[in-house]
Length: 472
Image 1 (cartoon, rainbow, N blue to C red):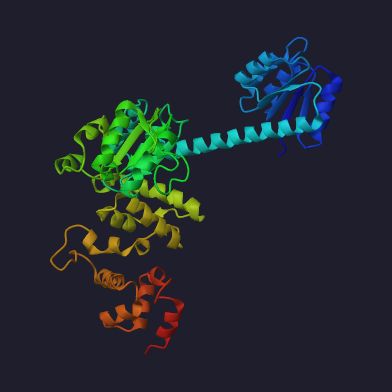
Image 2 (cartoon, rainbow, N blue to C red):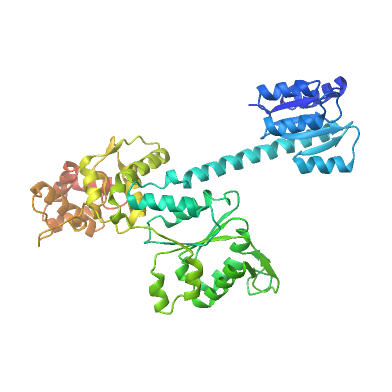
């Protein structure tokens, strides 16, 4: 669809000249002979760009410009005048005009400025869409959980987000600490500022200081240019220090100073840099215990722990599992162009019985896997991984690790699964251990709907099936 442009000028000749220049670039152009007519156009149609003369009888160009800001907030505005002055130009640019051109103007120059204005406008639209998408992704609606604990966390996050205080989010790996941190940022007054993350566990200790504070050229071997650190990049926004317990005590002292003074120095520089950064820290460790061990500074802990948020494990909020499953099915249906409707009652029972040591991340990974391999409308037990199907992940068991009431068919199925799991899916080895032929094992896998799980990338390939067909 061509870009929509409105040209406003009381000079018929010049107005027609501008229109002709724009039409030859295949823009869609409307022309208004005065300000009143331009406002009528803007009330009935959306424009990407408004090109207006300043001095016109009745409603002048400055008034048209003000109306454009109200009626066409996404449009760019270029002002034209035969009476240029530096003061007028500065005032217009300050108010939001994209450019200010003297009349008469060269058509090539006009084309270039119009192109730049439209590119700038398109960039703003894309940035707006990206921020909207990010906000939706990390808004409270994407933090799934109707359990009492999670509802209390949502309420707390909504309040905390409006402050600039430091937040410490604690919880096991996979519980969603980063998601909470992003929700705090994207629901805060800092939403239009940057969200910068540093994973303190992913970097060697000698690199973390440079990543946090930046460095000057030549400050150490390999410092070939001046580099900004995460604090500087996060100015005006939020800095997430993920797994902060991994930072060693010497660097903890420098971090404490930044939190207290809100200023720091790049490595190799004696100049202090002031920043406006909100810090959100996460950890999967008990910092009180780390303090007792001498691994974490107590004064830094209190500086970080201004607003504490404790994220529960998935095993302590199992009532949220059905909603989380629905959420992940929707997500991975879109990514994989699938239309899985849900999980069977039996599969849900299996998922609810599992203890989820990997928390939400583990659940998400398993649902993604099930979506990929599922060829039916619903995820069943056959689409779930072996560790979930194993009796060891379930409730009360007898001394033989078999639940009372389990059918012979289910015991056989689980025995086959566990044997294959123990030998990386190798059918030939598993069959030998089970005391059956490879063909019998293959038939059992088909009978239980498990053949697809072990088919790709190993001894369970079609080549092995050919070998099995010759098995007596």
